[in-house]
Length: 101
Image 1 (cartoon, helix red, strand yellow):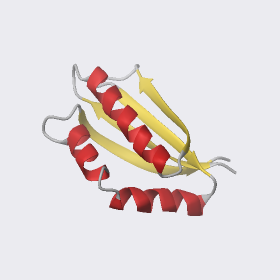
Image 2: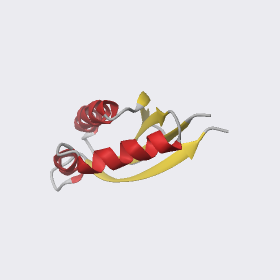
Image 3: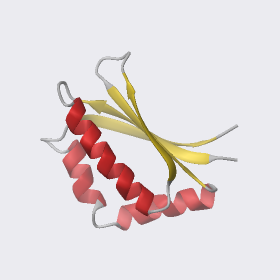
């Protein structure tokens, strides 16, 4: 059974290209920690524009290890600041873990 995590990010007006560039960096970082099947999707039917990033893990234990290792990775906090800081392209986000049914 697939398990994973998805993040929906609200993009600041005029900053879609910047948000996609930061998302690529996040995907590279998460992949280094074992995430599989990474996807980035642009929700174009909403205003403001939102970006969905999703990845999978082997099981819930592996999903937890990915999350734990991200929090102590020295690249994680600067990347969060680049994305969501005062000058970042993103206004906010919500992350949810999921199980395929």
